[in-house]
Figure 1 (cartoon, each protein chain N blue to C red):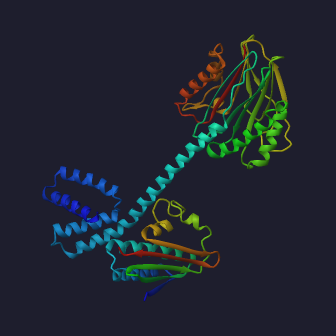
Figure 2: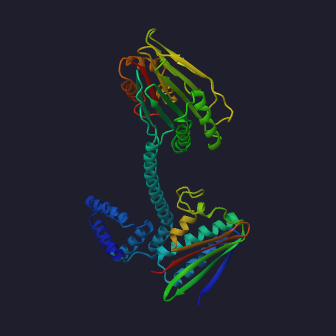
Length: 133
Length: 333
């Protein structure tokens, strides 16, 4: 049975709460310090995107156990404007990143699986999963 | 592999903590290269350091261990920046490769053969300033009595210019076997360019035709650099220009036609602005200087003349062309 908990993102301080939740859950799954830092950085990035571009949304953390494989999923969802050109946002060196290694490609690199569902005017849902090796 | 890496790191660290020699540091440097090869990120290096230190110096206060966790947090984005950099470098390499292939395609596309015409010696040089050229030289020759030459310059450089130029090439192929005179040829090309090329792209072009029977050279220009006619009998240059709008501006543009009779040892030089607007660190190369370079080799065969002018101007520009360079010499024998 998957365990899911969530943090609503309205202010910048909620990003800290989301990170805290993610770190606690990551520890419970058994991730080491480096992976914990990767997972929380991914949460920061996703939560900040919600805060900056959608205004409000939520970060959900789910502990996974699929056929004895343990992992963690971050689900970032908002009802913001949506991403007009996902392909572009996934490109290295695009816009805000500019060689800082941030943005969506950064999140994808920090995690193992990455999925974007977005609809213009309706919102965005990003799911990022990391598996315990 | 990770355990092996940790073991090796721990050993080098232990030795360094023992005697802090330069040799130990050198080993460390060599090992960091291995870490990069093994694709180990900066945050992992800190983690390896932390666990190695736990074995080597177990008695440290807990705050020291926490500080490493803090450092790991610091390094995550450096690791991401590194990965992004690696991926951008790879993409650049791929693009470089694509450009090289494209340039080969262009070379094939632009192949032109110097025609054999009674009493006329022809030579040319065309060199791109970057991988892809925005200059275009094309010879038309159907028989011994007649030859045509097109010299075009697409404003801008690189890929956009090269794509635009393939339209000019397509246009030239379509007039190759027609009996159009220079102004007719430019009208046809103009309509093609106007229809198929973006508004922000402009092309200048000169088309000239030599008639061996009457020894006349007739020409039309679409806003192109004037050609030069060297009159051997007077030992001076005369500019050949004809009114006409740049290609691609208006579908109804009209092109004036001019013609000159060529005497023995006269020659015509048609060029792009890469020749006339050659730049050195001191500024533009004076027109007089260019004329002097051309006339200094006026007794050599046309091909040698063109090559000499290129070599001289290339040298003056420190072997770094600012613009695509093209020069055609038509010399009356």
